[in-house]
Image (cartoon, rainbow, N blue to C red; front, side):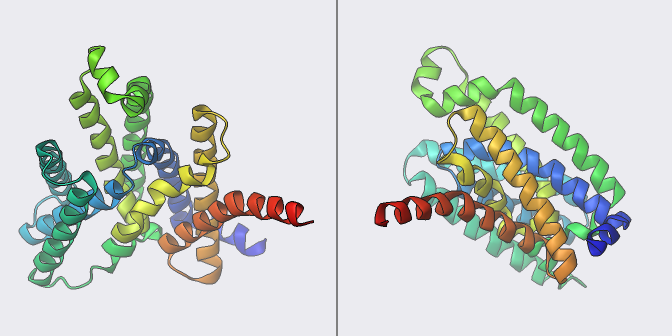
Length: 275
């Protein structure tokens, strides 16, 4: 308990905890639609495209956040175009774009003068969050959550039946663009927390943890938010106490929560049947 109180006294830990909780809410809400649409790979794809933008911005000495966002928007536009061509499956397109952009980012960083360490981007470092990062991230989160609830009904209709939604006059492409935009700006900030490699897990684990036990979509959204918040809190304090990477610790905590919520009840049911 003493060490937990001690951690809360440090400003860097306070910023990390605040940023983690803010993004936990955003990712839990967006993750519901990613999981229901069976697009779990999309988180990795966007993160890798953003990584390419980060590398390009670093190499050209441009504004990294702006460059990464513009590259991600262009990359998602390319993915949407390829998916409409119906030449390849959606998962295949996301997969090979993801790998190509990762390779491109590594090549660009390898030839960037004076830049060799890419671990911060790959694995994240939430304890390095600045006050500016926290304020910008909080504004981003507020905008994303506002957009989410403005378009929630349309997103649900798009998930249930895109053809029916289109027949009722919904502009599917516009709703799709807004959803992808929310994902891009959210992942752009979350990379600093869990990194490129682990970002997909941060997006899909909270929803999957409660999907099988939730009795309604509203319960699933609330449950995923609670799981995400719990994972961030547990992961951050574990990271501080054991001196291990914070991003990996958060994902590990989320994984443990998922197993407890899903496998614990199943084991109990199996034990009762055997008894």
